[in-house]
Length: 516
Image (cartoon, rainbow, N blue to C red; front, side):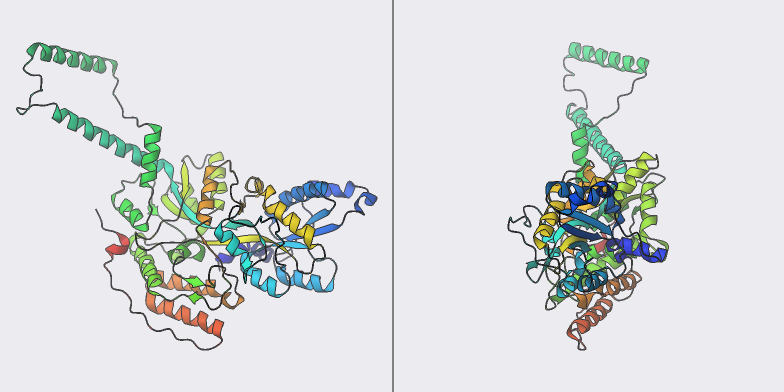
């Protein structure tokens, strides 16, 4: 399903090509190692690093060479196929001497890696892996059975994107209307009970005032100048921030009253056919594996809050009428770039795509990134996140230096990861040239990590199917109940039947807001 395109993009490319993608070293700097005399390298032990994301090639090559120059060790990155990646690592670790000492993998695979002996518990005597350096979701993502088994490297999650130019125009109009209203009130307060100016008794002063006013008006008319309201920048920014929706209900209220520019075709649109952009609706109320995503005793899919959230999701179809068969992520993002949308939900790639469009003159707007809105004041949301981790192979004979390099890569060298690769570093307090990139980090810190249990590996496929059914109008309660029973049967190995929860009866306005 589409979710896996977000967490295994290189594997998808390799599958489409039908061949194994490039094996070897892609960095020009790393290629310079071949020019170093053999006798200079013999004394340096070699640490092998495997990865599947081609976008990392130059960056990893540069970091590896810098580390090699600082330490008495060579680090050799190797780009390998994403197809049967973990299986290949396992086979080579057991049968050859060409296995990786450490490798990069998404956190949903960590249980499988650990149980196969391919993920060694982290050696972190310095306390690097702490909430001082990483968010709680990042640490949960690399924790298995209360052990840290990887270093958080980079992540993927979703956030709300908005057209700031449209919001700025709306905010300016709002401030101007308020200024006009205040001016009118001041004028009314300046009149006496008879509707005359308060200083009407002072005829001399009144006459002078009238002459002055007429003179000023005449001067203005002669010059052709018309005063226009220009809000202060700080005042405008404050109003825009206040207008950014904090709930889905706010978006619906906004849509009811918004006098949209001609080119705007929809206030809010997102890929309703991909679980990655839908999961936030239930992320705060569905539990699959507990905080670390590894506990088969902690599974709660079918509950009243999740039902209420999905009822709200279903009601949105009546408001926005998005056809899952006619929409996908790329088409939605293109519509946003074309100025046809005010709000959308997107992953971290949106920043680079918009900046490229701005450079090409295809996006003549400003934009902003903010947290995913809650459903309403009562029902909260929580985005899904995937964390790619650097893992030390349990079969490695060089665990100490492998751990040292993993900490170096994910800590000290995380600063320019985004600028070099487009991947969002999991490390806290990393600066960005583009402040919109930084906004994703705030959403990541609130996210729910994708679970790592093998027993629920098809949960995402089943949940995506459930969302599609619910969007199309099928019973929320029945659909969620069937999903929960299927997953629980997989986990327990026995037929499982949930006790029926009566679907709550609510006024639709609770979810879709009242029209103004």
